[in-house]
Image (tube, rainbow, N blue to C red; front, side, top):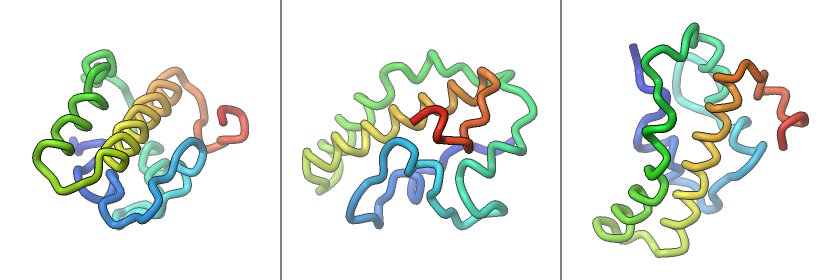
Length: 106
């Protein structure tokens, strides 16, 4: 078992512009796959993943970033928006959608 997201690269700490929408599916990662979306091919079941528990996570992450980092409020809000979009694309994935065919969803 491995986390679907880490807390560094997946939150774009080294990006000048935080990607959104379909651009989230093209992000290269330093992993066993070339892109984050490619890693989802290894997920066989959503058992144990309760996306409803993440409903407030974007806001919580934004509040933590504002309070405990030197990140600007604007960037913290953008990061929260990206987290929300990642949760949305996981939801689509768990509904059986082939999210890497992004033209259908964005």
